[in-house]
Amino acid sequence: MTPPGLPPLADRVLAWQPRHGRQGLPWQHTRDPYRVWLSEVMLQQTQVATVLDYYPRFLARFPDVQALAAAALDDVLALWSGLGYYSRARNLHRCAQKVVAEHGGHFPGDSQALARLPGIGRSTASAIAAFCYGERAAILDGNVKRVLTRALGFDGDLAHAAQEQRLWQLAQALLPDAAAMPTYTQGLMDLGATVCLTRRPACLLCPLAADCLARAQGTPERYPVKTKKLKRGQRHHALLWLEQEGRLWLVQRPAEGVWAGLWSLPQYDSVEALQAQVAAWPGQGEWLPPLRHVLTHFDWHLQVLRWRHPPGVAEPAPGGRWFSLQEALALGLPAPVRKLLQPPTA
Image (cartoon, rainbow, N blue to C red; front, side, top):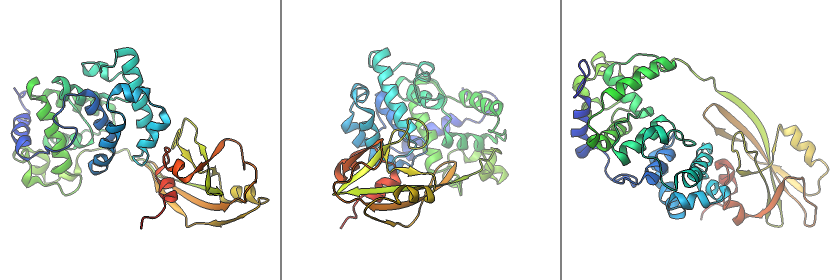
């Protein structure tokens, strides 16, 4: 029963989802925590259309948590290449190994234990528990925050932890009975993804419209409130695309930082530093059009020098390896580097 003072949100979501919500996503209609966990991690800050391409390929290569735990991290990163936010892939691998080593290959059966695993936050843990175990555990990803803050007229500043905790408490108070948790959880996700959009929400199609305080105020796009704005930074580096007899020189990036653990073109602090590196080299080079790679907190401006090394010249610098193009494209590569190296299709 909905607590006094709160709208009958759960009943409306439960009536709407089977008729109007999404039904055909490949990770739906399963209680396999491995598949639900994989989809939830992939969908963090990534569009569904993109995940629909990666999810079946990942499952084909790693069909269960044991296969993922036994894989080399390089293989996991290679299959993740292009999805971005690569810490997710590293945590996915670590989590699989911990599930196998400490839980006998079975995911824990409640949200609190799930949240103690690498890379699984509170909302992801609750989603797994709700879908797979019917636990009455609230989720609060970006889409659901938008739905709930608008429906409830919740104007607390989510930049402050105390206000976020208040919203968690309200989300928990609105939950239906355990048997309805999978449908309700999916329904909230569907509303945020397809109806209660960030801009120009389709309020006329929303089952919560009659009780939605943000709609009544005429300001749904004002919610959720979060005043803390991140100032975008700018970074400038140079990359060396070094070729010799059809091979490419790649280096593996450090275990921490952007593109951690991926194979990439050697990076230099500036165009001048790269020019100094190649000043006495044999061969010839050309500067390619500059690249701009947009990341969460900064724009990365990359100047790329393509240099053709004559046959027989020794390794240009320590810390890298020569790869054929086919070998290189099978590695975990950053998306802009993969796009750069990928031959154009006919």
